[in-house]
Image (cartoon, rainbow over all chains, first blue to last red; front, side, top):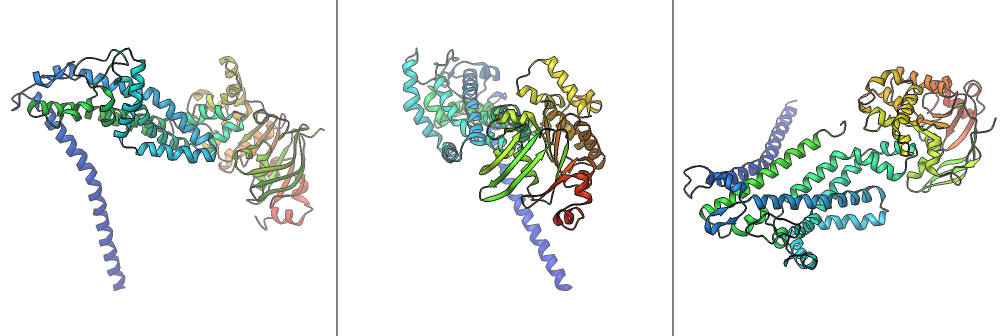
Length: 301
Length: 250
């Protein structure tokens, strides 16, 4: 009896310890997010608060400016926001259909041997360092665009769109595939039982039932595209001013603005780069809000 | 009367496993035929060979003949056409996650009917035939998954009826339902047999006795006995049938 009591106490202690160990680990992620957010916002909002030691800059000029010339004190990022959004939009428009159809093929149509080739290929695509995507873009896509472009330069919005399109494929494919796989077979049987063909079943029952999962994949793809830096930097052209006026215009995404200049920037210039980070951060927060909306009302909606 | 189904020397294999052994059976039109037997005896498998649902499973092989109105369903009839002629209701109600209307209109739409007035008419007629029109007519645009299990099952029956099948296969259609919903489905089956042929797999022997004209007893992939329901339940010829219906095993 007494022994049992001892054992209970010991087990209880173990449970408690384990509990705190898990809790501690879980807080690492939360603290990191909070710290990064605080740091970026703290540094990035300084220039807009009157009396800043490094000098002030108008928030409106920052968000509506079409020119980025640190040497003469011009820090406008509207043309970068537009560039980032256009590139992301283009990548989604091209990449999502390809990704969804690939996922449908893997999940519903492909014979086993084809699956054993495509799935590892997709996983491999996800694992390729982004700088290599950039090199591929620079070595293959940019020269190709140069041939068809009316402008002298191949580095362009179109090049960014192509590179990003390839980069979001693994995200869209894997998430869509798992969404399709989680559609109950009972739905497929119900459809086949009514004499519907395989294609009709896929488009009218399976994909609609997997809708929220697919949307989650799309939203994550958007996040990936808007946050991508390295690959994009190599193929974007990164001009110092001007809204893109065609798909052949060079663009300067928000991410590359930070990455290119941070190493030598100081003073107000450095703070304006942090401010660019704040804008990027706000986009990512928006995307996450949309994502939690999208994934919440799944099955019954 | 001509046979609706003639099954001749039917063997079915899952890979190396023989799930059905030399089944011979003749099913008359506008009757209810019950398939009974212990779990794993092959009754559901048999049911699914009748609309080629087993085609979906890898490694399935069918030998012998299944004739629908004299035509071999594995050789002479296109599978999508076959499944419009033979409707199916499943063990667990499986309405699609869409409105009641879209569920019932699904089959007709899959076969190319687009006109709204025509679809409206089909939906109403099918829901009435499935005896659920009065319960859902005011919420026909509501998601079918918001209905009770019994209502969902009758929506599924309406969905199957919407393509005007000649035969309705029911795979333990009431095993997931409460007693009152079960009775409703049984009444419905008896009503429907005036127009169509019904083959029903059931674990519930009272159900088989209540609603079916003929009963087939399956054991280990073999058809042990097939006769008028009254005979099967009063004077079975085979000892194994008797043991099963008196509850000695299964």
